[in-house]
Image (cartoon, rainbow, N blue to C red; front, side, top):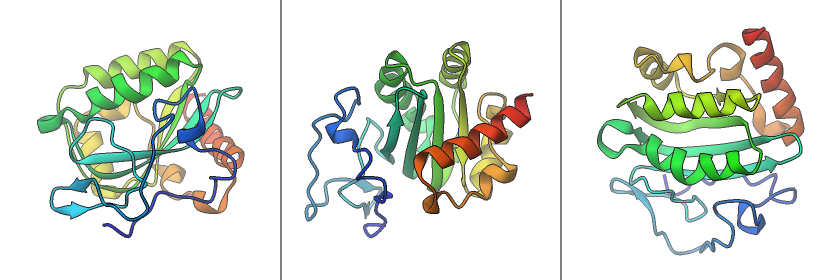
Length: 190
């Protein structure tokens, strides 16, 4: 897992460390020192911690004018034991909502497992995002993770499946990814 880096091809467009509106503003990363791990597996030092001991993220892009953010994840999403959604909601989502972000694109290719807990934080996030004209879309999450999310009835808050699971997002620019995800969301909600 230590060789899996967050996507870096948009760093010339945006870095959360240099964004004064980002919860990760001012974060410094080592290229050589591994500080975080998912259980006993070290992860690349460019991933950001947000309170979970098994799930890490990287804000790849934020557009405050269009009101969207792209976040990539790695690890195990564990609401049951670690209440990961609480940390994500309180420490990442709420500060971004306060800055006008209401459309969330979550990249989950490296989310290995999902363990559900309570759905309250998802419901709260959904309400706050949709009240502001937004949504929460999951892109390229693994099939068994999507099945676990659906079994926990979280598909009432999160949009995933279909073309959202087949996006070659790494070959796109952020605005192109946003347009493709937004078109899928509008099609589903319309």
